[in-house]
Length: 290
Image (cartoon, rainbow, N blue to C red; front, side, top):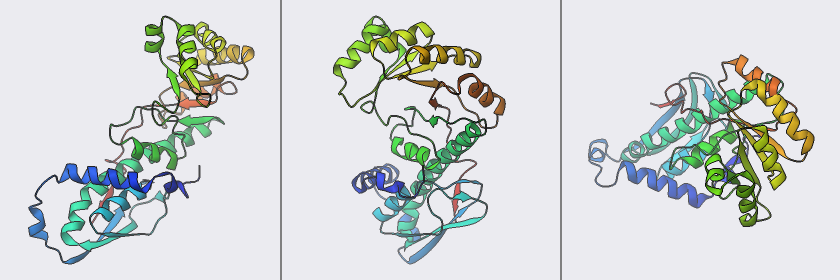
């Protein structure tokens, strides 16, 4: 997905509310340091000190807007950063600049870190000939989901479902509680709106076939060894060609053999790769304001 225009996905009211909550967390009461810095008109420069993908400009803007500062950008969203690139300038009263600085940097660094990891994972998958989707999961940091999901999109990955209402995801514990795959899928189909898809997490071909027969739209092959994926996915698609098949794996961009094994085992039969081990790269993909 082209990063251009992605900021339109973020409602201004939501951005303002998030910025307020982050700033209030950092300064819920008196800001004693403001008396030290004063209110003289000041300017700060944002520099990229390590390689990565720039992501999170709307959050950065929203934070500084709430403290009466103006941001001027020199690089568009999704830019590949190289040290030492001048990314942006921020102008405003000194105490306001310093009030928003750390919150804005934390948010931008986190979003850029996720985008950088996502871009690396997508590139690694494409390098093996993978033509399906690479998607994130719902395993996000509480309170930071919008930031991290946005980072996925900027990095070229799919965000999968944003929350519990975006897809009916039947996991192993749901199956256990419902008394079996068929009962779990039937219950999901009864309550799901016709616009909602039902995805079922399966750990065997038997479960996958049962889920497809019961009406699942998507089947997620979980905890499979790479060499097991191809025969399982092929057998399922042979019986149920309309059912989408996904693979739940951990992608480490630098471990190309792992990516290749998964591709070789599942390519042509699966449409989605999902990974949850995206780490915050703020330590190595951070932005420095000086």
